[in-house]
Image (tube, rainbow, N blue to C red):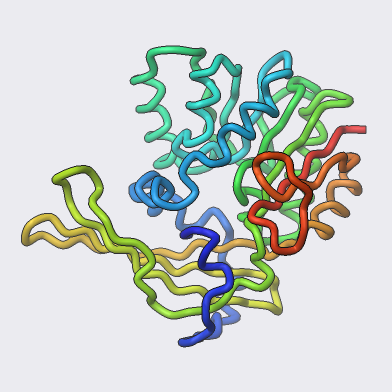
Length: 279
């Protein structure tokens, strides 16, 4: 999924999602395939713009922080480098393999604990962490209401009383523009390395509240071409909708932010961040 700049893109080339296809898809599908290109793409889109925010959030926390959907360690490792005790959880073995390679190369800070687990059933003791963080859109990969409810219940179980739960939603998914097979990114994997082109299509299944990103990565090195195609599905949730679900799970929403510097949230804000406290 590419940068937020695409969120209000044109609507040419719509293709409605198959009802059968949307019904069987779960949000974790596609992430193993995405792992090989995730860091390349994010270096050109979101990058580390959110990392200083998460560093500020975790600076005053005593005890380990739990990160949901740690992936390749894009956020995990910069925090660990600065001395944050962090436990990262992810379902994708391919994503975690890349994060573990980063840990092996680590030269400073503290070593993060990386666990392969489903965020709907967290492998932690009740009340064992003072803070849980869910960066950029991880909760929206829970495409069914019961899965989101189960995850929020698990977060409420493992976070300490009066503990913090901070999460970010993908901004403006409810009105993300649809398009078909657009060249979203081009570039080299490494200086002098293979060249990658990302062809992306976006579909909205509004009946089910889903946004589907069809990704095709084409990698060329000399005369060899490799193609990887998969779909990433996100649940369309607004800030008010997520706030209500947090309150139902036993949290009090203390702040809703619209950027990584702590500015107020509004409908067209670049970031949709909620900070809640366990009651």
